[in-house]
Image (cartoon, rainbow, N blue to C red; front, side, top):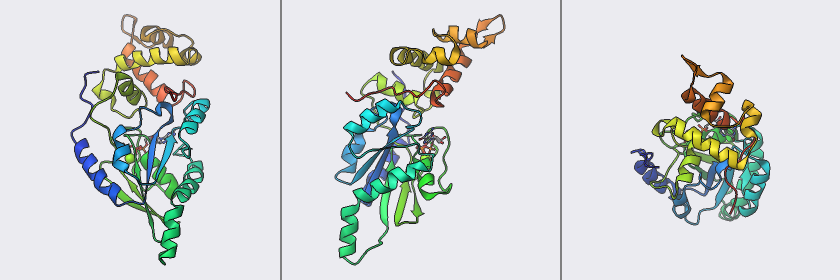
Length: 270
Ligand SMILES: Nc1nc2c(ncn2[C@@H]2O[C@H](COP(=O)(O)OP(=O)(O)OP(=O)(O)O)[C@@H](O)[C@H]2O)c(=O)[nH]1
Ligand SMILES: [Mg+2]
């Protein structure tokens, strides 16, 4: 995939993140349960150093529950959530307290019980970082929208119960290990559609679904096959009766992202 998908502002985002990471007590790394390998920035591991880190598989409501369970097995202590639902707090807050138990104990010893605990939320674009923060705060404090690149600069949010949360812009890394990573990031909405040809993307999604969840396309559209067949079946036709594959490609990507093709996970632990 020879595309320029690493936006110019990412280098700045990275520098800022490095600086911010040094000043926090813990890290929440949020990634997408449907692509739980590809949606993790490989640079973050080293950047987080030894900071206590909670791994959170977001969009678990859209992922295949059996596959999410496999991921949680290889990532002990991780949480799987729908970041937009209040249930996310119930999974994340106790896990955070557990992660910070040692820190809380030391603060208490030093007579600093109740000192705010600084937690940074990091991850690739559009994984639900701002949404998770809003759920934890129980108010719409951080701007969240259904496209990558919404949060442009980092910011602190004060939460009752002793936490300070930092929202950060999504961070990508300069080179994919393989094209699969790029496609899966695009399917799940972490990189902007405009940087790739939509029909190429949708055609690849069709191949991926046919291999992993045969029946998913048929279940939604009443037929399998390529973009043309799907467009015909849906009645997406251009003048002269030509299948409107461009419109179908957009509809397919939207349907996948909204979970309308079923609960689907593109990646399993190796
Ligand atoms: N179904 C579902 N939707 C989610 C979940 N988490 C986030 N979303 C939706 O995903 C979209 C992106 O959420 P944001 O919170 O803006 O994502 P972000 O990580 O802050 O994105 P950037 O700031 O662009 O990096 C929003 O439309 C959310 O409602 C989830 O767990 N399940
Ligand atoms: Mg955001």
